[in-house]
Length: 598
Image (cartoon, rainbow, N blue to C red; front, side, top):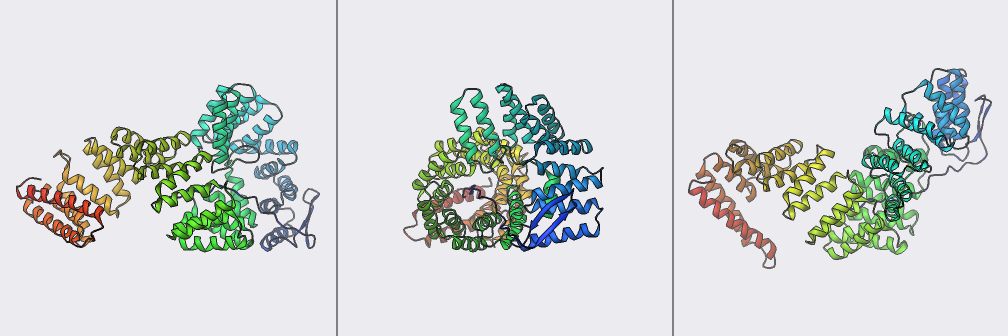
Protein backbone atom coordinates (compact mmCIF):
# COMPACT_ATOMS: atom_id res chain seq x y z
CA UNK A 1 0.00 0.00 0.00
CA UNK A 2 1.34 3.39 -0.92
CA UNK A 3 0.79 6.59 1.05
CA UNK A 4 -1.22 9.19 -0.83
CA UNK A 5 0.39 12.31 -2.19
CA UNK A 6 -1.07 15.32 -0.43
CA UNK A 7 0.75 18.29 -1.94
CA UNK A 8 -1.67 20.64 -3.64
CA UNK A 9 -0.45 22.88 -6.41
CA UNK A 10 -1.45 26.45 -7.13
CA UNK A 11 -4.60 27.12 -9.13
CA UNK A 12 -4.74 27.67 -12.85
CA UNK A 13 -4.51 31.32 -13.93
CA UNK A 14 -6.50 32.18 -17.01
CA UNK A 15 -4.22 33.95 -19.49
CA UNK A 16 -6.48 36.79 -20.60
CA UNK A 17 -5.48 39.29 -23.25
CA UNK A 18 -7.29 42.38 -24.52
CA UNK A 19 -9.15 41.76 -27.73
CA UNK A 20 -12.64 40.49 -28.47
CA UNK A 21 -14.94 41.61 -25.66
CA UNK A 22 -18.25 40.43 -24.24
CA UNK A 23 -20.00 43.39 -22.65
CA UNK A 24 -22.58 43.07 -19.94
CA UNK A 25 -23.92 46.57 -19.88
CA UNK A 26 -27.14 46.62 -17.93
CA UNK A 27 -26.09 44.06 -15.29
CA UNK A 28 -26.84 46.54 -12.55
CA UNK A 29 -25.13 49.24 -14.63
CA UNK A 30 -22.00 47.57 -16.02
CA UNK A 31 -20.50 44.23 -15.08
CA UNK A 32 -17.25 45.15 -16.74
CA UNK A 33 -15.55 44.25 -19.96
CA UNK A 34 -14.57 40.61 -20.16
CA UNK A 35 -11.65 40.03 -22.57
CA UNK A 36 -11.89 36.61 -24.15
CA UNK A 37 -9.24 36.46 -26.83
CA UNK A 38 -6.74 34.70 -24.58
CA UNK A 39 -9.30 32.68 -22.66
CA UNK A 40 -9.75 28.96 -23.01
CA UNK A 41 -12.02 28.33 -26.02
CA UNK A 42 -14.73 26.56 -24.04
CA UNK A 43 -14.87 29.41 -21.53
CA UNK A 44 -15.28 32.00 -24.27
CA UNK A 45 -18.00 29.92 -25.95
CA UNK A 46 -19.91 29.41 -22.69
CA UNK A 47 -19.83 33.16 -21.92
CA UNK A 48 -21.03 34.06 -25.41
CA UNK A 49 -23.84 31.51 -25.07
CA UNK A 50 -24.96 32.95 -21.72
CA UNK A 51 -24.74 36.50 -23.06
CA UNK A 52 -26.95 35.53 -25.98
CA UNK A 53 -29.54 34.37 -23.45
CA UNK A 54 -29.62 37.89 -22.01
CA UNK A 55 -30.09 39.37 -25.47
CA UNK A 56 -33.01 37.03 -26.11
CA UNK A 57 -34.66 37.57 -22.71
CA UNK A 58 -33.41 40.81 -21.14
CA UNK A 59 -36.05 40.65 -18.38
CA UNK A 60 -35.39 37.01 -17.41
CA UNK A 61 -34.00 36.51 -13.91
CA UNK A 62 -32.89 33.00 -14.85
CA UNK A 63 -30.89 34.32 -17.82
CA UNK A 64 -29.14 36.94 -15.72
CA UNK A 65 -28.45 34.39 -13.00
CA UNK A 66 -27.12 31.98 -15.60
CA UNK A 67 -24.67 34.59 -16.89
CA UNK A 68 -23.59 35.34 -13.33
CA UNK A 69 -22.91 31.67 -12.69
CA UNK A 70 -20.91 31.31 -15.91
CA UNK A 71 -18.77 34.29 -14.94
CA UNK A 72 -18.41 33.08 -11.35
CA UNK A 73 -17.59 29.49 -12.26
CA UNK A 74 -14.94 30.41 -14.81
CA UNK A 75 -12.84 32.95 -12.96
CA UNK A 76 -14.72 36.22 -13.52
CA UNK A 77 -16.19 36.59 -10.03
CA UNK A 78 -16.36 40.43 -9.89
CA UNK A 79 -18.28 40.46 -13.19
CA UNK A 80 -20.73 37.90 -11.76
CA UNK A 81 -21.96 40.11 -8.91
CA UNK A 82 -23.96 42.70 -10.94
CA UNK A 83 -25.60 39.84 -12.86
CA UNK A 84 -26.66 38.15 -9.62
CA UNK A 85 -27.98 41.46 -8.34
CA UNK A 86 -29.99 42.05 -11.51
CA UNK A 87 -31.42 38.52 -11.29
CA UNK A 88 -32.43 39.25 -7.69
CA UNK A 89 -34.19 42.43 -8.74
CA UNK A 90 -36.15 40.61 -11.45
CA UNK A 91 -37.17 37.76 -9.12
CA UNK A 92 -37.47 39.00 -5.51
CA UNK A 93 -38.67 35.60 -4.30
CA UNK A 94 -35.52 33.66 -5.32
CA UNK A 95 -32.96 33.29 -2.52
CA UNK A 96 -30.10 31.92 -4.58
CA UNK A 97 -29.20 35.15 -6.38
CA UNK A 98 -28.55 37.23 -3.27
CA UNK A 99 -26.79 34.23 -1.71
CA UNK A 100 -24.48 33.75 -4.69
CA UNK A 101 -23.82 37.51 -4.79
CA UNK A 102 -23.05 37.57 -1.07
CA UNK A 103 -20.53 34.74 -1.29
CA UNK A 104 -18.88 36.33 -4.33
CA UNK A 105 -18.62 39.69 -2.51
CA UNK A 106 -16.87 38.18 0.51
CA UNK A 107 -13.54 38.76 -1.21
CA UNK A 108 -13.69 42.53 -1.44
CA UNK A 109 -16.91 44.06 -0.06
CA UNK A 110 -17.86 42.55 3.27
CA UNK A 111 -20.56 45.12 4.02
CA UNK A 112 -22.52 44.49 0.84
CA UNK A 113 -21.86 40.75 1.22
CA UNK A 114 -23.52 40.83 4.62
CA UNK A 115 -26.62 42.60 3.31
CA UNK A 116 -26.98 40.13 0.45
CA UNK A 117 -26.50 37.12 2.72
CA UNK A 118 -29.03 38.46 5.23
CA UNK A 119 -31.52 38.81 2.40
CA UNK A 120 -30.81 35.23 1.30
CA UNK A 121 -31.16 33.90 4.87
CA UNK A 122 -34.50 35.72 5.20
CA UNK A 123 -35.81 34.13 2.02
CA UNK A 124 -34.25 30.71 2.78
CA UNK A 125 -33.88 30.45 6.57
CA UNK A 126 -33.06 26.72 6.56
CA UNK A 127 -29.86 26.81 4.46
CA UNK A 128 -26.91 26.29 6.86
CA UNK A 129 -24.06 27.86 4.80
CA UNK A 130 -25.86 31.24 4.70
CA UNK A 131 -25.91 31.32 8.50
CA UNK A 132 -22.30 30.19 8.63
CA UNK A 133 -21.10 33.05 6.43
CA UNK A 134 -23.14 35.57 8.44
CA UNK A 135 -21.56 34.15 11.58
CA UNK A 136 -18.13 34.60 10.06
CA UNK A 137 -18.86 38.24 9.17
CA UNK A 138 -20.22 38.91 12.65
CA UNK A 139 -17.12 37.37 14.19
CA UNK A 140 -14.85 39.57 12.08
CA UNK A 141 -16.88 42.62 13.19
CA UNK A 142 -16.41 41.70 16.86
CA UNK A 143 -20.07 40.77 17.36
CA UNK A 144 -19.46 37.60 19.34
CA UNK A 145 -23.09 37.11 20.39
CA UNK A 146 -24.31 37.50 16.81
CA UNK A 147 -21.61 35.14 15.52
CA UNK A 148 -22.48 32.50 18.11
CA UNK A 149 -26.18 32.72 17.24
CA UNK A 150 -25.50 32.24 13.52
CA UNK A 151 -23.04 29.35 14.00
CA UNK A 152 -25.46 27.63 16.36
CA UNK A 153 -28.28 28.02 13.85
CA UNK A 154 -26.12 26.47 11.11
CA UNK A 155 -25.32 23.57 13.43
CA UNK A 156 -28.97 23.06 14.38
CA UNK A 157 -29.81 22.77 10.69
CA UNK A 158 -26.86 20.46 9.99
CA UNK A 159 -25.39 18.68 13.06
CA UNK A 160 -22.44 17.52 10.95
CA UNK A 161 -21.45 21.05 9.87
CA UNK A 162 -17.78 20.97 10.89
CA UNK A 163 -17.06 24.61 10.03
CA UNK A 164 -19.92 25.76 12.26
CA UNK A 165 -18.25 23.90 15.13
CA UNK A 166 -14.98 25.64 14.32
CA UNK A 167 -16.82 28.96 14.25
CA UNK A 168 -18.21 28.31 17.73
CA UNK A 169 -14.69 27.38 18.84
CA UNK A 170 -13.43 30.73 17.52
CA UNK A 171 -16.13 32.59 19.45
CA UNK A 172 -15.21 30.75 22.66
CA UNK A 173 -11.52 31.36 21.98
CA UNK A 174 -12.15 35.11 21.53
CA UNK A 175 -13.79 35.10 24.96
CA UNK A 176 -10.88 33.23 26.50
CA UNK A 177 -13.03 30.15 27.16
CA UNK A 178 -10.42 27.59 26.17
CA UNK A 179 -12.16 24.52 27.59
CA UNK A 180 -15.41 25.35 25.84
CA UNK A 181 -13.53 25.93 22.59
CA UNK A 182 -11.74 22.60 23.02
CA UNK A 183 -15.09 20.81 23.27
CA UNK A 184 -16.22 22.20 19.92
CA UNK A 185 -12.94 21.29 18.21
CA UNK A 186 -12.99 17.79 19.69
CA UNK A 187 -16.41 17.24 18.11
CA UNK A 188 -15.11 18.61 14.80
CA UNK A 189 -12.14 16.25 15.09
CA UNK A 190 -14.51 13.31 15.55
CA UNK A 191 -16.40 14.27 12.40
CA UNK A 192 -13.47 15.30 10.18
CA UNK A 193 -10.16 13.92 11.49
CA UNK A 194 -8.42 14.36 8.14
CA UNK A 195 -9.04 18.08 7.72
CA UNK A 196 -6.09 20.39 8.29
CA UNK A 197 -8.37 23.20 9.52
CA UNK A 198 -9.54 21.14 12.50
CA UNK A 199 -6.02 20.40 13.72
CA UNK A 200 -4.88 24.00 13.20
CA UNK A 201 -7.80 25.21 15.30
CA UNK A 202 -6.85 22.62 17.92
CA UNK A 203 -3.33 24.06 17.97
CA UNK A 204 -4.72 27.54 18.68
CA UNK A 205 -6.84 26.21 21.56
CA UNK A 206 -3.85 24.45 23.11
CA UNK A 207 -1.87 27.68 22.91
CA UNK A 208 -4.69 29.45 24.74
CA UNK A 209 -4.63 26.69 27.36
CA UNK A 210 -0.83 27.09 27.67
CA UNK A 211 -0.04 23.59 26.47
CA UNK A 212 2.78 24.35 23.99
CA UNK A 213 3.81 20.75 23.26
CA UNK A 214 0.28 19.72 22.33
CA UNK A 215 -0.11 22.91 20.31
CA UNK A 216 3.07 22.21 18.35
CA UNK A 217 2.00 18.63 17.61
CA UNK A 218 -1.49 19.68 16.51
CA UNK A 219 0.00 22.34 14.22
CA UNK A 220 2.36 19.78 12.67
CA UNK A 221 -0.52 17.37 12.12
CA UNK A 222 -2.55 20.16 10.54
CA UNK A 223 0.20 21.13 8.13
CA UNK A 224 0.59 17.53 6.99
CA UNK A 225 -3.09 16.55 6.83
CA UNK A 226 -4.25 15.47 3.36
CA UNK A 227 -7.19 17.94 3.21
CA UNK A 228 -5.83 21.51 3.39
CA UNK A 229 -7.57 24.44 5.03
CA UNK A 230 -9.08 27.26 3.01
CA UNK A 231 -7.57 30.72 2.94
CA UNK A 232 -9.90 31.84 5.75
CA UNK A 233 -8.68 28.99 7.94
CA UNK A 234 -11.88 26.95 7.75
CA UNK A 235 -12.29 23.52 6.17
CA UNK A 236 -14.05 22.07 3.16
CA UNK A 237 -17.32 23.94 3.63
CA UNK A 238 -20.31 21.95 2.43
CA UNK A 239 -22.30 24.27 0.16
CA UNK A 240 -24.26 21.87 -2.07
CA UNK A 241 -26.49 24.39 -3.84
CA UNK A 242 -23.67 26.70 -4.90
CA UNK A 243 -21.27 23.83 -5.63
CA UNK A 244 -23.75 22.13 -7.95
CA UNK A 245 -24.61 25.37 -9.75
CA UNK A 246 -20.97 26.29 -10.32
CA UNK A 247 -20.10 22.75 -11.35
CA UNK A 248 -22.71 22.83 -14.10
CA UNK A 249 -21.64 26.28 -15.30
CA UNK A 250 -17.89 25.83 -15.06
CA UNK A 251 -15.89 24.74 -18.10
CA UNK A 252 -12.51 26.34 -17.38
CA UNK A 253 -9.61 24.07 -16.55
CA UNK A 254 -9.45 25.71 -13.11
CA UNK A 255 -13.09 24.92 -12.33
CA UNK A 256 -12.89 21.41 -13.75
CA UNK A 257 -9.79 20.79 -11.68
CA UNK A 258 -11.50 22.05 -8.54
CA UNK A 259 -14.49 19.81 -9.24
CA UNK A 260 -12.23 16.82 -9.89
CA UNK A 261 -10.27 17.24 -6.68
CA UNK A 262 -13.46 17.64 -4.65
CA UNK A 263 -14.90 14.49 -6.20
CA UNK A 264 -11.67 12.61 -5.54
CA UNK A 265 -11.68 13.67 -1.88
CA UNK A 266 -15.27 12.41 -1.64
CA UNK A 267 -14.30 9.01 -3.06
CA UNK A 268 -16.17 9.50 -6.36
CA UNK A 269 -13.14 8.41 -8.34
CA UNK A 270 -14.65 7.73 -11.78
CA UNK A 271 -16.29 11.16 -11.87
CA UNK A 272 -13.08 12.78 -10.65
CA UNK A 273 -11.14 11.15 -13.49
CA UNK A 274 -13.68 12.42 -16.05
CA UNK A 275 -13.52 16.00 -14.73
CA UNK A 276 -9.71 16.04 -14.60
CA UNK A 277 -9.42 14.57 -18.09
CA UNK A 278 -11.58 17.43 -19.39
CA UNK A 279 -9.40 19.91 -17.48
CA UNK A 280 -6.26 18.47 -19.09
CA UNK A 281 -7.85 18.73 -22.53
CA UNK A 282 -8.54 22.41 -21.84
CA UNK A 283 -5.02 23.10 -20.55
CA UNK A 284 -2.73 20.25 -21.70
CA UNK A 285 0.58 21.93 -20.82
CA UNK A 286 -0.17 22.57 -17.14
CA UNK A 287 1.86 19.94 -15.29
CA UNK A 288 0.01 20.24 -11.97
CA UNK A 289 -3.24 19.31 -13.71
CA UNK A 290 -1.67 16.21 -15.18
CA UNK A 291 -0.27 15.23 -11.80
CA UNK A 292 -3.76 15.50 -10.30
CA UNK A 293 -5.06 13.27 -13.08
CA UNK A 294 -2.30 10.75 -12.34
CA UNK A 295 -3.44 10.60 -8.72
CA UNK A 296 -7.07 10.07 -9.75
CA UNK A 297 -6.17 7.39 -12.30
CA UNK A 298 -4.09 5.57 -9.70
CA UNK A 299 -7.08 5.60 -7.33
CA UNK A 300 -9.26 4.17 -10.12
CA UNK A 301 -6.96 1.18 -10.59
CA UNK A 302 -6.22 2.02 -14.24
CA UNK A 303 -2.56 1.10 -13.95
CA UNK A 304 -1.41 1.43 -17.55
CA UNK A 305 -3.26 4.73 -18.02
CA UNK A 306 -1.68 5.96 -14.79
CA UNK A 307 1.81 5.17 -16.03
CA UNK A 308 1.20 6.77 -19.43
CA UNK A 309 -0.21 9.97 -17.90
CA UNK A 310 2.62 10.15 -15.38
CA UNK A 311 5.14 9.90 -18.21
CA UNK A 312 3.40 12.77 -20.02
CA UNK A 313 3.55 14.88 -16.87
CA UNK A 314 7.25 14.19 -16.40
CA UNK A 315 7.94 15.10 -20.03
CA UNK A 316 6.57 18.60 -19.36
CA UNK A 317 9.18 19.16 -16.65
CA UNK A 318 11.95 16.55 -16.32
CA UNK A 319 13.18 18.31 -13.15
CA UNK A 320 9.86 18.22 -11.31
CA UNK A 321 10.34 16.24 -8.11
CA UNK A 322 6.62 15.61 -7.76
CA UNK A 323 6.43 14.34 -11.35
CA UNK A 324 9.19 11.82 -10.64
CA UNK A 325 7.43 10.83 -7.41
CA UNK A 326 4.16 10.23 -9.22
CA UNK A 327 5.75 8.23 -12.01
CA UNK A 328 7.51 6.17 -9.34
CA UNK A 329 4.23 5.40 -7.62
CA UNK A 330 2.57 4.58 -10.95
CA UNK A 331 5.40 2.25 -12.01
CA UNK A 332 5.32 0.48 -8.66
CA UNK A 333 1.57 -0.05 -9.00
CA UNK A 334 2.20 -1.52 -12.45
CA UNK A 335 4.66 -4.01 -10.96
CA UNK A 336 7.68 -2.28 -12.50
CA UNK A 337 9.35 -1.98 -9.13
CA UNK A 338 12.94 -1.32 -10.18
CA UNK A 339 11.84 1.54 -12.42
CA UNK A 340 9.56 2.85 -9.70
CA UNK A 341 12.41 2.71 -7.20
CA UNK A 342 14.68 4.74 -9.50
CA UNK A 343 11.98 7.38 -10.06
CA UNK A 344 11.27 7.79 -6.35
CA UNK A 345 14.96 8.04 -5.57
CA UNK A 346 15.30 10.71 -8.27
CA UNK A 347 12.37 12.62 -6.74
CA UNK A 348 14.17 12.75 -3.39
CA UNK A 349 17.40 13.84 -5.07
CA UNK A 350 15.51 16.78 -6.58
CA UNK A 351 13.64 17.59 -3.35
CA UNK A 352 14.91 15.92 -0.14
CA UNK A 353 11.94 17.37 1.73
CA UNK A 354 9.35 15.53 -0.37
CA UNK A 355 8.19 13.28 2.46
CA UNK A 356 5.34 11.73 0.46
CA UNK A 357 7.97 10.32 -1.90
CA UNK A 358 9.99 9.13 1.09
CA UNK A 359 6.95 7.29 2.44
CA UNK A 360 6.21 5.68 -0.92
CA UNK A 361 9.84 4.67 -1.33
CA UNK A 362 9.78 3.06 2.11
CA UNK A 363 6.63 1.09 1.26
CA UNK A 364 8.11 -0.02 -2.05
CA UNK A 365 11.37 -1.16 -0.45
CA UNK A 366 9.33 -3.19 2.00
CA UNK A 367 7.50 -4.90 -0.88
CA UNK A 368 10.86 -5.65 -2.48
CA UNK A 369 12.10 -7.40 0.67
CA UNK A 370 14.31 -4.56 1.89
CA UNK A 371 12.25 -4.33 5.03
CA UNK A 372 14.62 -2.55 7.41
CA UNK A 373 15.39 0.17 4.84
CA UNK A 374 11.69 0.61 4.28
CA UNK A 375 10.99 0.90 8.00
CA UNK A 376 13.68 3.56 8.39
CA UNK A 377 12.21 5.68 5.59
CA UNK A 378 8.65 5.27 6.82
CA UNK A 379 9.66 6.28 10.34
CA UNK A 380 11.22 9.47 8.99
CA UNK A 381 8.15 10.18 6.87
CA UNK A 382 5.77 9.56 9.79
CA UNK A 383 7.66 12.09 11.92
CA UNK A 384 7.29 14.69 9.17
CA UNK A 385 3.71 13.77 8.22
CA UNK A 386 1.83 13.02 11.46
CA UNK A 387 -1.41 14.01 9.78
CA UNK A 388 -1.17 11.40 7.01
CA UNK A 389 -2.70 8.13 8.24
CA UNK A 390 -1.44 6.13 5.24
CA UNK A 391 2.17 6.56 6.33
CA UNK A 392 1.49 5.15 9.79
CA UNK A 393 -0.56 2.33 8.26
CA UNK A 394 2.30 1.35 5.97
CA UNK A 395 4.80 1.61 8.83
CA UNK A 396 2.71 -0.60 11.12
CA UNK A 397 2.21 -3.20 8.37
CA UNK A 398 5.91 -3.30 7.56
CA UNK A 399 6.92 -3.57 11.22
CA UNK A 400 4.54 -6.52 11.54
CA UNK A 401 6.13 -8.12 8.49
CA UNK A 402 9.50 -7.78 10.22
CA UNK A 403 8.09 -9.53 13.30
CA UNK A 404 8.33 -6.38 15.42
CA UNK A 405 4.79 -6.69 16.68
CA UNK A 406 4.89 -4.31 19.66
CA UNK A 407 6.31 -1.54 17.49
CA UNK A 408 3.67 -2.31 14.87
CA UNK A 409 0.90 -2.00 17.46
CA UNK A 410 2.38 1.29 18.66
CA UNK A 411 2.39 2.67 15.09
CA UNK A 412 -1.24 1.63 14.57
CA UNK A 413 -2.21 3.23 17.88
CA UNK A 414 -0.39 6.44 16.89
CA UNK A 415 -2.44 6.47 13.68
CA UNK A 416 -5.70 6.15 15.63
CA UNK A 417 -4.76 8.80 18.19
CA UNK A 418 -4.74 11.36 15.39
CA UNK A 419 -7.43 9.74 13.20
CA UNK A 420 -9.80 7.95 15.59
CA UNK A 421 -12.36 7.34 12.81
CA UNK A 422 -9.88 5.69 10.41
CA UNK A 423 -11.64 2.34 9.94
CA UNK A 424 -8.73 0.57 8.15
CA UNK A 425 -6.51 1.55 11.07
CA UNK A 426 -8.86 -0.16 13.51
CA UNK A 427 -8.88 -3.28 11.31
CA UNK A 428 -5.09 -3.24 11.22
CA UNK A 429 -4.83 -2.80 14.99
CA UNK A 430 -7.30 -5.66 15.50
CA UNK A 431 -5.29 -7.90 13.20
CA UNK A 432 -2.03 -7.01 14.96
CA UNK A 433 -3.55 -7.76 18.37
CA UNK A 434 -4.74 -11.12 17.04
CA UNK A 435 -1.28 -11.92 15.68
CA UNK A 436 0.16 -11.00 19.09
CA UNK A 437 -2.14 -13.40 20.90
CA UNK A 438 -4.49 -10.75 22.29
CA UNK A 439 -7.92 -11.75 20.90
CA UNK A 440 -9.90 -9.64 23.39
CA UNK A 441 -8.12 -6.46 22.30
CA UNK A 442 -8.52 -7.59 18.70
CA UNK A 443 -12.30 -7.92 19.06
CA UNK A 444 -12.54 -4.46 20.62
CA UNK A 445 -10.60 -2.81 17.77
CA UNK A 446 -12.60 -4.65 15.11
CA UNK A 447 -15.88 -3.69 16.75
CA UNK A 448 -14.78 -0.05 16.44
CA UNK A 449 -14.04 -0.58 12.76
CA UNK A 450 -17.51 -2.01 12.15
CA UNK A 451 -19.17 0.84 14.02
CA UNK A 452 -17.55 3.17 11.48
CA UNK A 453 -18.13 0.94 8.43
CA UNK A 454 -20.68 -1.82 9.11
CA UNK A 455 -20.31 -3.22 5.58
CA UNK A 456 -16.56 -3.81 5.76
CA UNK A 457 -16.09 -7.55 5.05
CA UNK A 458 -12.39 -7.50 5.99
CA UNK A 459 -13.26 -6.30 9.48
CA UNK A 460 -15.89 -9.05 9.81
CA UNK A 461 -13.44 -11.73 8.67
CA UNK A 462 -10.83 -10.65 11.22
CA UNK A 463 -13.52 -10.34 13.87
CA UNK A 464 -14.65 -13.90 13.12
CA UNK A 465 -11.11 -15.22 13.52
CA UNK A 466 -10.61 -13.48 16.87
CA UNK A 467 -13.99 -14.62 18.16
CA UNK A 468 -13.08 -18.18 17.12
CA UNK A 469 -9.82 -17.91 19.06
CA UNK A 470 -11.84 -16.86 22.11
CA UNK A 471 -14.09 -19.91 21.74
CA UNK A 472 -17.10 -17.77 20.77
CA UNK A 473 -17.84 -20.00 17.81
CA UNK A 474 -21.44 -19.02 17.12
CA UNK A 475 -20.49 -15.34 16.95
CA UNK A 476 -17.50 -16.20 14.75
CA UNK A 477 -19.66 -18.10 12.28
CA UNK A 478 -22.14 -15.21 12.21
CA UNK A 479 -19.29 -12.81 11.39
CA UNK A 480 -17.95 -15.08 8.63
CA UNK A 481 -21.46 -15.48 7.23
CA UNK A 482 -22.08 -11.71 7.17
CA UNK A 483 -18.80 -11.20 5.34
CA UNK A 484 -19.60 -13.99 2.86
CA UNK A 485 -22.92 -12.33 2.01
CA UNK A 486 -20.95 -9.28 0.90
CA UNK A 487 -18.28 -11.35 -0.87
CA UNK A 488 -20.00 -14.46 -2.21
CA UNK A 489 -17.16 -15.17 -4.67
CA UNK A 490 -14.33 -14.87 -2.14
CA UNK A 491 -12.77 -18.36 -2.19
CA UNK A 492 -10.73 -18.04 1.00
CA UNK A 493 -13.65 -16.61 2.94
CA UNK A 494 -15.94 -19.39 1.72
CA UNK A 495 -13.36 -21.96 2.82
CA UNK A 496 -13.07 -20.34 6.25
CA UNK A 497 -16.84 -20.31 6.75
CA UNK A 498 -17.19 -23.92 5.61
CA UNK A 499 -14.39 -25.02 7.94
CA UNK A 500 -15.97 -23.24 10.90
CA UNK A 501 -19.37 -24.78 10.18
CA UNK A 502 -17.83 -28.25 9.89
CA UNK A 503 -15.51 -28.17 12.90
CA UNK A 504 -17.26 -26.04 15.55
CA UNK A 505 -16.87 -27.89 18.88
CA UNK A 506 -20.46 -27.16 19.91
CA UNK A 507 -22.87 -29.48 18.08
CA UNK A 508 -25.55 -26.80 18.28
CA UNK A 509 -23.38 -24.51 16.20
CA UNK A 510 -22.11 -27.05 13.66
CA UNK A 511 -23.93 -27.27 10.35
CA UNK A 512 -22.44 -30.12 8.35
CA UNK A 513 -24.91 -29.90 5.49
CA UNK A 514 -24.27 -26.19 4.91
CA UNK A 515 -20.53 -26.79 5.17
CA UNK A 516 -20.83 -29.65 2.66
CA UNK A 517 -22.56 -27.42 0.08
CA UNK A 518 -19.89 -24.71 0.42
CA UNK A 519 -16.96 -27.16 0.36
CA UNK A 520 -18.35 -29.02 -2.67
CA UNK A 521 -18.64 -25.69 -4.50
CA UNK A 522 -15.02 -24.86 -3.66
CA UNK A 523 -13.74 -28.19 -4.91
CA UNK A 524 -15.70 -27.93 -8.13
CA UNK A 525 -14.23 -24.46 -8.79
CA UNK A 526 -10.69 -25.76 -8.25
CA UNK A 527 -11.41 -29.01 -10.12
CA UNK A 528 -10.64 -31.00 -6.94
CA UNK A 529 -6.97 -30.04 -7.26
CA UNK A 530 -6.57 -27.75 -4.22
CA UNK A 531 -5.65 -29.80 -1.12
CA UNK A 532 -7.02 -27.14 1.28
CA UNK A 533 -10.40 -27.33 -0.43
CA UNK A 534 -10.33 -31.11 -0.24
CA UNK A 535 -9.37 -30.88 3.44
CA UNK A 536 -12.44 -28.70 4.02
CA UNK A 537 -14.68 -31.09 2.08
CA UNK A 538 -13.41 -33.98 4.19
CA UNK A 539 -14.23 -32.09 7.40
CA UNK A 540 -17.73 -31.35 6.09
CA UNK A 541 -18.27 -35.00 5.16
CA UNK A 542 -17.18 -36.06 8.63
CA UNK A 543 -19.56 -33.51 10.18
CA UNK A 544 -22.45 -35.21 8.36
CA UNK A 545 -21.32 -38.67 9.51
CA UNK A 546 -19.86 -39.78 6.15
CA UNK A 547 -16.54 -40.84 7.70
CA UNK A 548 -15.48 -43.24 4.94
CA UNK A 549 -15.92 -40.54 2.31
CA UNK A 550 -14.06 -38.09 4.58
CA UNK A 551 -11.10 -40.49 4.88
CA UNK A 552 -10.97 -40.95 1.09
CA UNK A 553 -11.13 -37.18 0.48
CA UNK A 554 -8.38 -36.53 3.02
CA UNK A 555 -6.30 -39.17 1.20
CA UNK A 556 -6.76 -37.35 -2.10
CA UNK A 557 -5.58 -34.12 -0.48
CA UNK A 558 -2.57 -35.89 1.02
CA UNK A 559 -1.60 -37.38 -2.36
CA UNK A 560 -1.54 -33.89 -3.92
CA UNK A 561 0.65 -32.61 -1.08
CA UNK A 562 3.09 -35.51 -1.49
CA UNK A 563 3.33 -34.97 -5.27
CA UNK A 564 4.00 -31.28 -4.69
CA UNK A 565 6.71 -32.09 -2.16
CA UNK A 566 8.38 -34.46 -4.58
CA UNK A 567 8.59 -31.73 -7.21
CA UNK A 568 10.03 -29.03 -4.97
CA UNK A 569 13.53 -27.70 -5.55
CA UNK A 570 15.97 -28.49 -2.70
CA UNK A 571 16.40 -24.77 -1.98
CA UNK A 572 12.67 -24.21 -1.40
CA UNK A 573 12.94 -25.02 2.29
CA UNK A 574 10.26 -22.64 3.54
CA UNK A 575 7.53 -24.10 1.35
CA UNK A 576 8.71 -27.62 2.09
CA UNK A 577 8.34 -27.00 5.81
CA UNK A 578 4.77 -25.75 5.38
CA UNK A 579 3.77 -28.69 3.20
CA UNK A 580 5.33 -31.28 5.52
CA UNK A 581 3.37 -29.87 8.45
CA UNK A 582 0.17 -29.77 6.38
CA UNK A 583 0.71 -33.39 5.32
CA UNK A 584 1.12 -34.46 8.95
CA UNK A 585 -2.17 -32.78 9.84
CA UNK A 586 -3.94 -34.52 6.96
CA UNK A 587 -2.64 -37.93 8.03
CA UNK A 588 -3.86 -37.35 11.58
CA UNK A 589 -7.31 -36.30 10.37
CA UNK A 590 -7.52 -39.23 7.96
CA UNK A 591 -6.78 -41.59 10.83
CA UNK A 592 -9.54 -40.03 12.95
CA UNK A 593 -12.03 -40.29 10.08
CA UNK A 594 -11.18 -43.95 9.61
CA UNK A 595 -11.88 -44.42 13.29
CA UNK A 596 -15.30 -42.81 12.95
CA UNK A 597 -14.40 -39.56 14.67
CA UNK A 598 -14.26 -36.02 13.33
